[in-house]
Figure 1 (cartoon, rainbow, N blue to C red):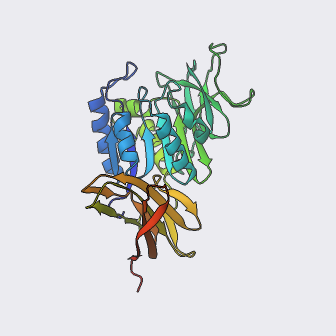
Figure 2: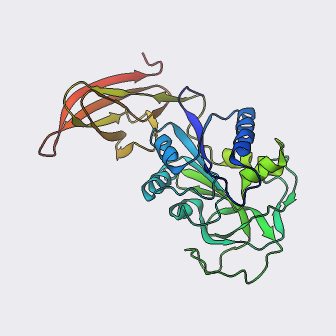
Figure 3: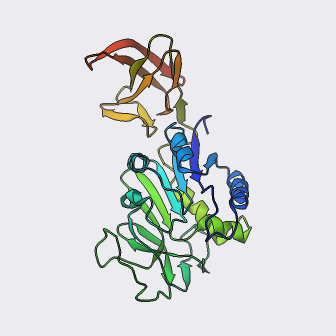
Length: 327
């Protein structure tokens, strides 16, 4: 994988959840071991602020929220939803409330915000992989989910009736309420939702091939963006150094019609193969622009503009930059 391109950013709460069997340090140790064994490039953070900081660098194409207590801001949730729509991947597992409910549409589900009263979870053979057997397991905490448009991968069995609570779901009234693990293709991206704490249970199983580890592996593969091929996506890192007065800058990058850019979520799609990002810079400040990913070789047409006092933009610098092995 090109340097600078990370598959996945994972968030785990900095404080232990009351429902967790294992403390955060043990979960992190297992997760780091497992991700390394599986060959993933990753960053683990433990709170919403750190997640937002990493998200806006544009260095990531997949995101996993494996926490019950962390609530992303509405702005970050919306940006994450936009990123999924534009081709990036999202996994949520271990959320037992509606803290990040602005992402339910991208997950293809509705969440009632209550526990599901059921005897366990079942997965049919060959759903996680061609060789995977059928699984039956019983995580201690199970979330009541309404399946709107997502595909059901695992279901609750022995579901008790009258488990109480009014649903907040926007799904139709007759939706499937027995789904436990779901996958969904949302516009150009993909999302997975697990109604149980997949990381805590994987840590408890203490094995690289437990059913929970296999679910985590399937979920990361299911949400890996197809367009960002490990061998062809070239990350482009740019920075602007302001040695003058404080100024607001806009950088616009364009390509030829036959050339392909897969952008990070912090860039704005202006249409007609143009991408832009804006930043206010103080005197003597350096701005590291979010990574931009180019599929194959390309000539980037870069325009740097400054904002005038009347609000209009004026050209400061314009250059062509060759990425890859073009002559």
